[in-house]
Image 1: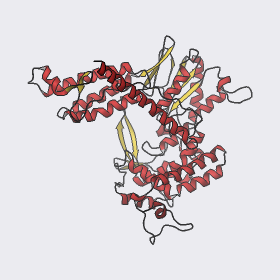
Image 2 (image 1 turned 90 degrees about the horizontal axis):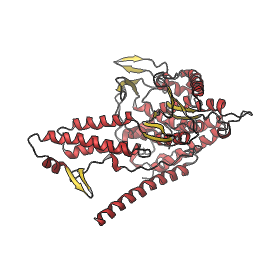
Image 3 (image 1 turned 180 degrees about the vertical axis):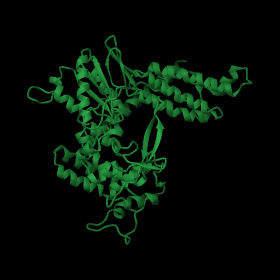
Image 4 (image 1 turned 90 degrees about the vertical axis):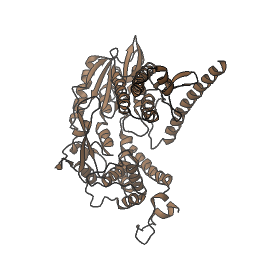
Length: 509
């Protein structure tokens, strides 16, 4: 069945019961994505040209497009929360329910259902974070309007904002931070900023006045309320953590912070913003979601920056967290996104932070404790995603020592796990032969016939490719595709080099 003939209505005609109902399994997703991307690119161009009436018309076209509705339903039924229902208990688990949802998705008489409130533990603290879960229908509506709002957010975003943005990541923020801080004459003082309850305290009136999307729909998202302990509570401020559109709204709320800083510190006498020639105070800004830092040449300048940011946030109903906002000298170092940035005798080194190392150690320890009666292959299967994920995140910084240290810690935990399983065995050699094997030049390989444990140090250090800050994901898609291929090529070349060295060593032996 050809999807183009089955799901595209004729000109001036609506989908009716007389036409064959399109089937979810027959959808040509490549064609769907191309159609949506074309509209998003047109929205981005219109925003760049500041043609706001055209932006509004194109957003309407996108949110009423059947292809966009299909993509919205697909995104909410394939993410991590697909099996978590809202207050209505509904889950779209079958192709038929998904297609019915896409056909029914509409803004006519739309009223958002209250959110289901749950509290999840905050890593490293005794506090809990509120999580608000919308119904599947409301999630799909949020995903649909996020498709039309995201191009606007990207075109108006702060250049040095990296969180919750297409084709940007924490690694890009880390690389840009390295560029700002690594030179001998770079700024010496850093203002570490953290916004107090960012998602929970954003002013609704500010959002309704400044976010360029359908106001009636946005109001439904913001004012839906939440249910906790069978009691309905109103939402007077903030965007719900758990909502698909919430990260975009939060980013758009904080966008403009960099411009506010640049207007004061990067403006020439003519008023034109020029970081290169006007940045005498060495002020640089890096933000990832609600975590950010600003560099300065003097401690007094950092204090002035803090006051400037406070006044910027106040208008939006936000304030800096006193506990997490500090002014630090680069020689003492500071933590950002799980890394520690510090200069040693004038040389900047970025390492995994102590908190990050302790967190992954606890995670590995918890899995091993839980696995007292597991088979060895099941334990390996549970540990590998942790070691691979953590080491991949930290592979572009100075992590070799941290990787070796974590391997040593994990080996000790596994040794205790193995000994506990065989209390009647006095021979340590027997335990070693049962759980550890020899592989090439390595003797202590925790493995079975089916799988083997991946060590942290198996991940080789590969530098991250810097991002060109002026590139837009909707207008410069070829650049981002090429950049991704270059990063993959770097990893492949490093893998080939490692394999060749091992082969050479075995032949020499």
